[in-house]
Structure formats: C-alpha cells, structure tokens
Image (cartoon, rainbow, N blue to C red; front, side, top):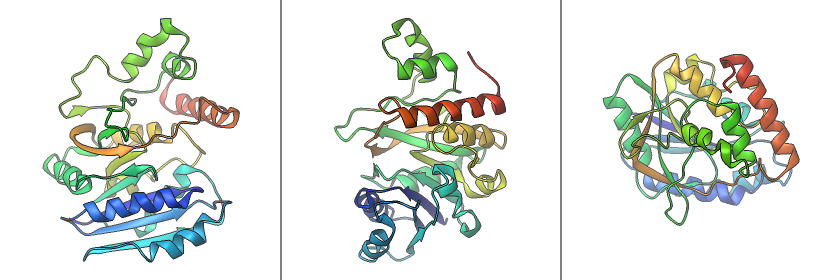
Length: 261
C-alpha cells in the first residue's frame, strides 16, 4: 500500500522540518511520498526548507518533495497543490506541529484498509506533555463556536461538550462528523473525487467542510488506539484577524451545510 502526506508550511520552517523527520523515521511498513508545501512564507521558509529537506534521512521507498507556492491562498489551497500528483491509496493531511512517536501512518492506513466503508479517519491526539486533546467531533454549531471564543459564557458549556462528544466513549473507534485538519487520513481516490479542500475558506473550518464532503462518500472515524503529538498553536481566540477569518469561514460553512444553533 502506497502512502502520501502533505505538511503545509507558513513561516517557521524548522517546526515543519522536525515534523517531517518524525514522519519519515516512524513510517516503516509502507512506501511514503511526503510533500512539504511552503505557502509563500514571508520569512523565507521556502528556500530554507528546500535546502534543509535535502538533509532529511529517508528509508527505501520514501520520497520528500518540497513545493514553494508563489501566493498564499489559504490552508486548503496549500494542501490542494499536490492533488494532481497523488497516486497513493491513503493520503495524510498533517500540521507542521505534529510529531509521531510510532508508525501511526501505517497503523491508520491498515485500519482503514480493514474497514473499506471508512473514507476518512484520525488518530487520538495528545499535547506534548501527554494530556489527551479534546477536539471537535460533531458538526459545527453556533453556540459551541461562540463558547469556544468566549468561555466565560458558562451556561453554553453544554453545547461545547456536545461538540466534543463528551457524552461518548472515545476510547474505542467511534464514528464522527468532524475530522480535524491537524491530522487526517483520507482515501486518496475519494479525496480527489470531492476536489480536496474548498479553497473558498482561507483559514479555519475548512476541515469541517471537507469532513462533510467525505461523509457523502463513506464514514469518518476517530481511531484512538493510534496516537500522535500535536502542539496545537491556537490563535483564533487571541488575535482579531484570525477571529475574523474564523467568523467568515463559519458563515460559509453554514450556507453550504445548514445552520445549527
């Protein structure tokens, strides 16, 4: 089984290089093509990444390709750059703040191979200190999203709990409605068939949108027995511009998939 993965980089190329090194080191059972896509980083990460990637240690069957975009058209557009090149069976969408400790790519791909009705999946994600990350698993709703920006609204915390599926046993493989873009596995054929990410989203919520598109072709699962470390650099609740991006993306999502209060 052939695997592929993409890490989209915007500034701070060193973090992406560390992620790439762990992906290459831990992926041992299947051939892997790893794409590092620089999204027109203003700090010069593209040329730095091209040079540094030459020093990455690869195993037989592993290939690293660096692509430098001339324009930053958003997270989804960065990932879509590789669509015409994909020939794998399973493709991985990875953030540059992901690190592997075991062969999670092979594990998840083999799990999906054993469950042919599943078209998209993600592993359990942990903070660097080992704490489990509680990430959205159900469809976006307005009250949950507002609470996540304004956690002082305690009376809406129950909507965030529902968003996180806090009422479910998440220690076993579980069907979900939201697969985070920080670490997702997709069947390449289906990912290409839906056109990859909707590039109308510049940043935020594009992973929720992709999940809805993939759900039209099959099931989406959390597979928590396989894990990865995710540093999770959150900005949307701290800065005005990311907050505005998220608001605009959420409005686009509701127009496409229906409003949920």
